[in-house]
Length: 415
Image 1: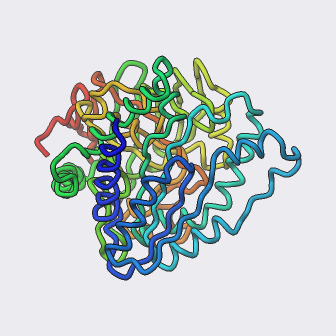
Image 2: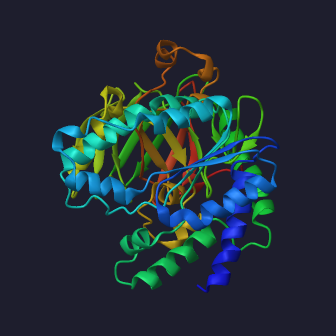
């Protein structure tokens, strides 16, 4: 891709992020958490656009992955319980103040390959423990937040190992442009309209108020109970004070929280899960009374086990999401090795914490009340994909009768 073409794409991307992803308000501050130095060109465009939109202050906190790798290779082995708490404290204070929050990352899924798995797991756990207060505010939609993943050379090399780095990065940009609809004449207008289409499916499911969903596909026979008062969401979110925003771009999903103690059966993943430098493939989980009681994996079993051992509630589900098999991301046939994209190609579940805004009154409940209502809280929230064109989904009514929700991976109703 020529430099001037990429520049035009970055301008479009930044405009989409500020106007739709964040819906940045006049006089609102913006806090950007950037994970790689390679995403700097897009970050700078977002900063420029945010100031043009009236933000009085944009702050960028850089978290270079390569520095983390250097620490893992050379720092004393007994030093990894330490974390620069000022970073997560800053993110918490900005979220609490009502700043818009942008998380931007083009993480290399192979970054920690060859490193001590126990050290990788410890590093992740310590980080998540420090991040928990900020994530709890995010889970209540206290302010606008958005996750964006632009291509980086190392990420592209992992997705397209048979191509040169330059060709791989261009190929990944082509895929991101299509999935984020940056090739549309007006991406902002497209997403504003598309959010409404996705919301129609969420409204249909909310009207049904199913007590459970049944999933059947090769390797999967799973019943996911839904708590009373669950709320299906999708196509954008709304803060507690009524500002619309889009937490993920791209997005194709409608989602809610499962009842943490009412998940039964076995689910087989249909896409690899990239987690902390390990690739988990060919895996399945068996649940009893909501808890994972058995795991199997062709590759990466130790990494999968480390997710479940994150804390006592990492063994329970925090999200169930429905995504039609025919979405543009799915039809590309690419394993992005990046949850933002892969989860929007497939029905998915998340191990760990639920979003409180997906339960009526959840944001105002105490931890004990949220758990009693069926919600799950954890330092983890790890999505994995299990949908396919062979999956059927049934909704279970309160009286026990069932009706089709999805057939062969597509909606069984008109939304």
